[in-house]
Amino acid sequence: MSTEIACTEKDQQNMKYIQDTLYVINGKWRILIMVSLVNGNTRYRDIARSIPKITFRMLSKELREMELNKLVTRTADELSPMQVEYALTDYCKTLWPILSEMIKWAKHHRTVI
Amino acid sequence: MSTEIACTEKDQQNMKYIQDTLYVINGKWRILIMVSLVNGNTRYRDIARSIPKITFRMLSKELREMELNKLVTRTADELSPMQVEYALTDYCKTLWPILSEMIKWAKHHRTVI
DNA sequence: CAGTATCCCTGTAGATACTG
DNA sequence: CAGTATCTACAGGGATACTG
Image 1 (cartoon, rainbow over the protein chains, first blue to last red):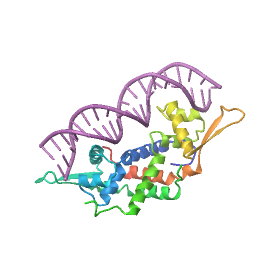
Image 2 (tube, helix red, strand yellow):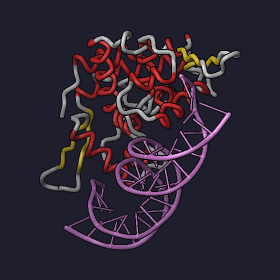
Image 3 (cartoon, each protein chain N blue to C red):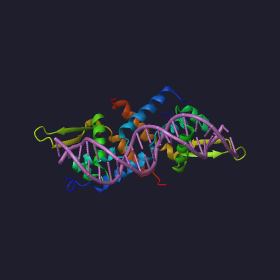
Image 4 (tube, rainbow over the protein chains, first blue to last red):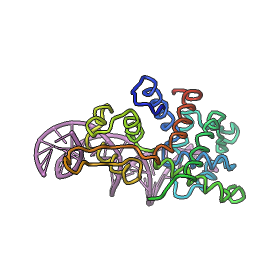
C-alpha cells in the first residue's frame, strides 16, 4: 500500500489481499491452536487441554475449518480410528513472517488503552 | 502430553502479542477505513461513500473505537462544527509493515478454497 | 454535513449431555 | 479417545428513520 493519495486498482487489490489474509488467521481460537500444535500437541484432547477455556465444540469447528483451509492435516490411524493426529501444514508455516511481524509490532508499538 | 510439552513463558507472551495486534487490526471495516483515509478521504461522508456497503452506524462505531485506540484523530472545526476531519495517526502507520507482510503473503501463498 | 436512535435478525459461541 | 447434539444467550451488524 502506498502512502500516495490515490485510490488505484493496486490499492484495491492490496485491500483484498489483506482481507484474504485476515480471513485465514482470524478468529478467537485459530492462532492459539496453531501455537499449541507448534508446541508439540498433536492429539485432540491435548490441544483442548493446552488452550484454556476452549470447548470441544469450538475446537472441533476450528480444526475442521483449518483443515478445509489446508492449515492443518488430520490423520486417523486406520487400525485404531480413535488415534488421530493433527499437524500444521507447510502452508500454515508460511504465515510465520506475518505472526512474527505482529509480535514485533505489539512489542514495540502497542499501547494498552 | 501437554504437561511435559508446556508452552514456554516466551511462547505465551508471543501469543498475547499476536492477540493484541489482531485486536487492533481486526473487524470487518477497520482496514477498509484505514485504506480510505490513506487514499485521501478525510470527511465522514467521503469515507462512507468510498467503502461499499458500509452503513453510517458501522462507520460511526468503528471510527469511535479507532479514535479510542489512537488509530485516527477526529478534528471538528470549532467555528463550523459540522466540518470534521479524520486522519490516521503515526501510531496507526506503524501497522504498515504488518499489512505489507499480509499483502505479500496473500500474493504468494494464498490459495482460494 | 455528521452523525443518532431503534428495531430486529442472524450468526457465534458457551454449557451440558451424549456417542461410537 | 475423539468427537456430536442440542439448547440457549448475547453481541454484531443491517435497515430505516430521524436530529442538530
